[in-house]
Length: 210
Image 1 (cartoon, rainbow, N blue to C red):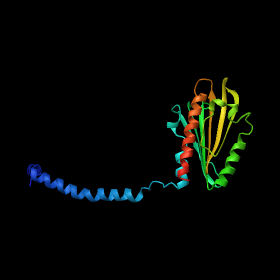
Image 2 (image 1 turned 180 degrees about the vertical axis):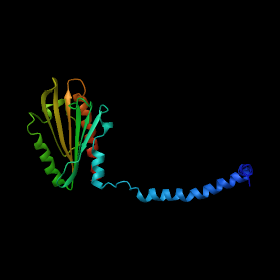
Image 3 (image 1 turned 90 degrees about the horizontal axis):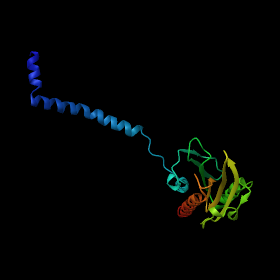
Image 4 (image 1 turned 90 degrees about the vertical axis):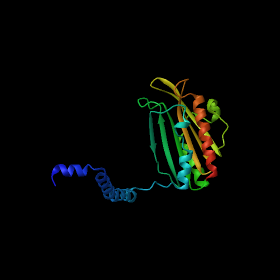
């Protein structure tokens, strides 16, 4: 068979169909082996424990903030008798002092949560403005079993601000929401109050799963 006869036969529609069918049959095992390999080597998505699910549900996310942050920093601190997450949202990457902070701790039982709540409150005992009366602009009707606010006044890069932290306990869950409040810019007292309300709603909702 010369080359021209081979080309003419290969170019025949019936011949082309045969070659296509043969190619499909040869490729099918390769594709199936590839699918099997991916299935065997891929890791299943991690399964959250019930307490981890509570923590994720309570933690503030971007939708709860008055602005979209440029940077997010998260840590998992070691917690006795529980688990916790510490997250900070920075409005500007080059001005990290404009931020909203949130911590959530889920304890094994309410006794451990009460102790954890007291420990967290002791962190802010040095703040000169304590309780809601000292900063009434951020006060709100809450659902917490226990809750306290702590604020201190100062200046950052010449900008007047109040650094505030609010610690609350909701059954086995302890939350801390903090932020640097400025005079009618970046993060106002009213905006911070709205963040506190959302955090309170989330933490109170967690009682159904505790």
